[in-house]
Image (tube, rainbow over all chains, first blue to last red; front, top):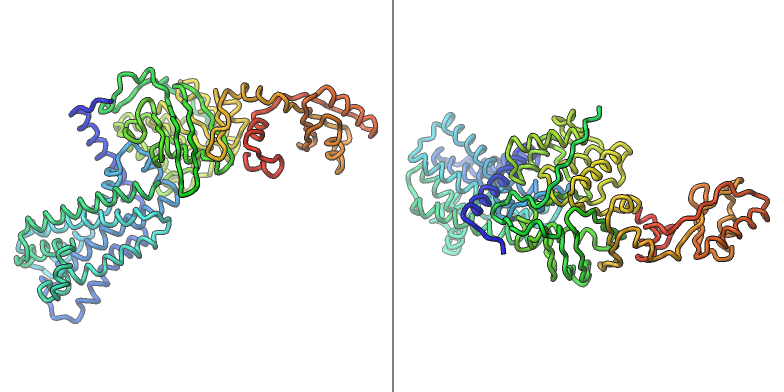
Length: 255
Length: 345
């Protein structure tokens, strides 16, 4: 049996992170400007937001957190549903599967590209809101943490769905939308959780967008449903659950 | 412009993965496969195969389409798990020590799976980073390999502008960026132009000289015959034969042949007439020549001469041939010459 030392584990961890970053960089270079990604990650959340906010007498403080929330949801989960099926078709995905890295590193690398994309788009929304609407901010750290953790969570969700063995991005985008759309309505983005029926409120607690939205709302208004540490903790739990399920699905479907 | 040939370093028992360093690497077989079985539903794609490949050996893995070659490679590279059996790469179990096993191998798949939206250089850098090769080493390796494969001048061009042969060369260069001790080569020269073919074959020869273990899958049986120390022929998921090419040919000495060309070329009826000669088991037309299969070449030569005399023509060349590796392949896999043989070349 080969011996495993602490230095060996460090070496292994470092190897995994380098590979994950290489995979993420590759996605940045190839997929960020793909039409499918721009439509799903930028235009879609914008139109969704306009559809539900236009005509309402709401202040920027009420509207901007919702826009940032759905932006992170859609943009973070838009990269992998496009990139992975395309790479299955071109068989470049086999190159990643056969690399000397674990599936965890592969899933992490794929998710990081969604994370970076989402953070960039959310930052644009944040800065634009600040510059144009002069949105007041109660606690910027809550907004930053909200964007970071929700982006990673939804990016991992996108990677999870991309495990489905198809070479057609449309198949995966359709499946992701089945989850993304209901999340918007049960997570307090447009409809406060308090006014949801009790069944809806129960479902809201199993939506990661609820906790992301709570953090971002808290950052702008100072009012929160949960403690920020609880929100961050829940998002981390969702990230880990999605990572484990994604890992399992990639292993199963690549056979 | 031809770049000076790169001497591939002799690489023995070298592993940068300190986490899994094994003190007995030097004595290991490059590949050891034991009773491997892989099923897809009711189909048994690989059925209890056992073989080993020595370090430094060039091993050909031949078989008709759907015989189980790709499935075997997917198992050996850790992409697909077997239902039962074991496979080790330089002593590392591919299922339990996947990362360590992969660290010493390079993989060139049948498809040129390069990122066409990236440049040649970016592709090389990505491949190297997946093996965690440091910046200076990966840049040095990438430069050497791109020069070796005559792609260096185009390194900053996006790959979607490359020809099929250039993409193939880049795929192989990416497979070599970690200086592997074991290289899986799946159909390296299939359907390529002459220039790319020559470059790739020279590269394979250099690798073999450099002591790299090569696991070669090819439909080009003559390529396997020339390059491989041993070949395995797999059919319907079972290893039908495994030996050195010359040893395999000896097993079917009864399949000898006469290659003959006539002064007046071919005629529509000649093939059937030659097939009807005594002691001729089978005949086929190959360009302006006929190949007659027999167990007794001397009798057939006499019969061919008599045939030429009777039909008022002359034999302009006649050659006695031993069995080829293709003959062995056809015999073992039960393929039919003519329509069937097209599947293997």
